[in-house]
Length: 254
Image (cartoon, rainbow, N blue to C red; front, side):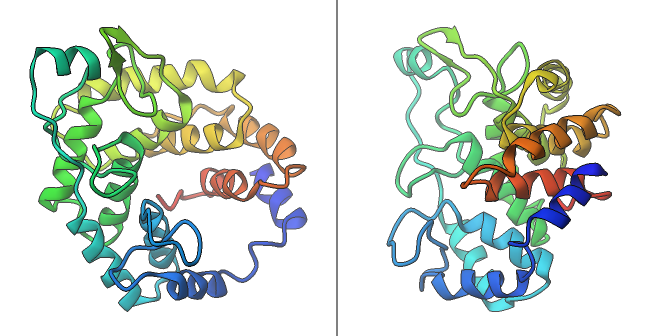
């Protein structure tokens, strides 16, 4: 695709992937988590990202084992249900996924990332992964798609966002209880919103989500190319460019 050629000729920061894997292993904490910045003691929500990198490199077995153990030990905090909690949160707070910060409530994005990382380790059917999929399904907005956290607050449905929606669809590509009722509306939402979306991260996750369900339209390549053109001028473009590359690959690796 055009975006692959564009990025391969103009972005040289992706040359030494092996060294990047070593660097991630070097900053890994003793308990197995990988911090967002070297030397930080918390949080560890970045651990699944490191796991996915090591998986694709086919290396760092010990680091992966430690990270896998940490991920399986971490769980979002349950909140007992009652009428007031249900009205405020709008989702089932007793379901257990993964939090942004250890000791806090489960959130959509860290849960979806943990599912992807565990699936890459051959643990897609692990009870924790299945429980996480139930969280993803429960957080779907009734009209289609996902927001960053809740699906409603104080009885008001929130608006879906393309990035979280694509990530949730990726997680659900492995199957989940009741997932058929949320996948179709989410795909329809992405097909409607992505042609007018410009943020590389949103486009990248969105197209990856569509491709995971074989639902990406032919014009998806144009969305990626336009997003790449704008992202190449940004100083903080690493995440956006990485997602565009993943979404552009002939066989998306997620």
